[in-house]
Amino acid sequence: MNYPKKLIVEPGSKVRLQQFDPAYRGKDEDAEQGAEKALETAKAKLGDLQRKMYGDNQHSLLIVLQGLDAAGKDGVCWHVIGGMDPQGCKVQGFKAPTPAEAGHDFLWRIHPHAPAKGEVAVFNRSHYEDVLVTRVHKLIPRKVWERRYDLINEWERLLAVENGTTILKFCLVVSKEEQLRRFAERLKDPNRQWKISDSDYKERAFFDDYLDAFDEALERTSTEHAPWFTIPCDHKWFRNLAVANIVADALEALDLQYPKPTVDLDQIRREYHAAAGEEKEKEKGGGKRKKD
Image (cartoon, rainbow, N blue to C red; front, side, top):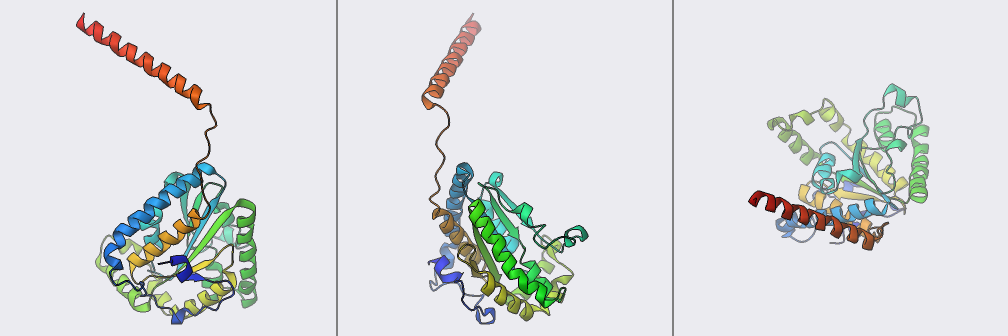
């Protein structure tokens, strides 16, 4: 499957998540059987590409994960981003702004976490909270969140143009029924109960409102330099495989290469052989003393 082509939100297109199928898993009925192996292959490719980007130090990657509760933002971090080298990758979450953060423009707390050249940054929730939560719960006037779409587009374009940042934004879509089933799993599993939040069931009352807010956010901010992808998440294996392949394809398109050595390799080889020769002589000398 061509995941990017199938799941991208084309700039200027209409989005209606109410009509989107969160249980979509492709047309191949046997795909799930090979999903684990396919994901490991994709993760290995991701790891190799990321190391090249880290060494090349000319590009950066920003991955944005947004979605309703239990859609799988943490799951993507564990099962997909986990294939990358932590040395060049960081995950940052954004919750309700602190009083200090709220005293600044809404992007003030975001920009310091944008990836430097050679880095991958993953936003587990992001600056889009400020056009989703604020809209749904009427925390700010309409005229304020409406103008933020343009500000977001300008900020993302700044990253792409000034810092060579590839931006991939994933809207993780889970059905209301599957969301409730995952909430039940959390209640039963002691290892998952820490993820339970007071807001889980309160926010379910706004499920449709969030879908409407996502519709407009995706329509207004899916651009050539920072596209959105709508990811069906009722099947976790498909969600992970889709995200992994989209990210790998985007990195592969950069034609990343390891940088050329900055030292004289012939000289380094001579020094190595000299050092290795000295070690062998020491070993021989040590063996003779033992015999004596």
